[in-house]
Length: 135
Image 1 (cartoon, rainbow, N blue to C red):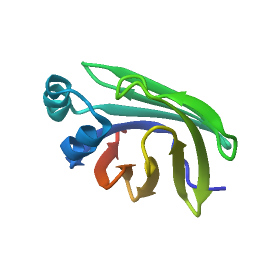
Image 2 (image 1 turned 180 degrees about the horizontal axis):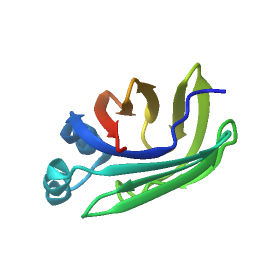
Image 3 (image 1 turned 180 degrees about the vertical axis):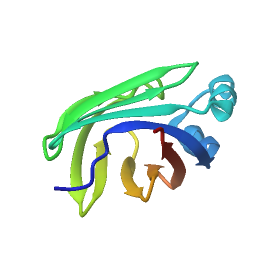
Image 4 (image 1 turned 120 degrees about the vertical axis):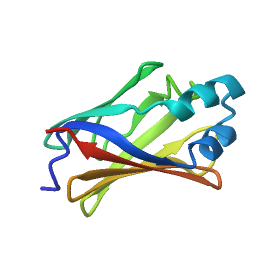
């Protein structure tokens, strides 16, 4: 069984969010607001079933999925696009491929020590975020 992702995680760093949002076509005002937010992630894991909530004072997003089962996702709170998503395990890393309007889109989550890492990818941009587990 891969690592336990359960818990509440607070953002500690956010690299290249602007570049990532720009290729998604996010408007200037939303990019400015998003750049100052420090969202929290709440992850509930039951075996290979996950619910990931991203919570902030501006917008909230929730995604539920089962590892290895494709699902339709609307990226509400980001660019509001629909895509076919598939999350799989690559060792202890959760990797999501999102097929839709944008090429090379997806994300990866993994844990190193008490840090949750998230890489968001779209086209040629990669946003790297790090979260710390809240005790």
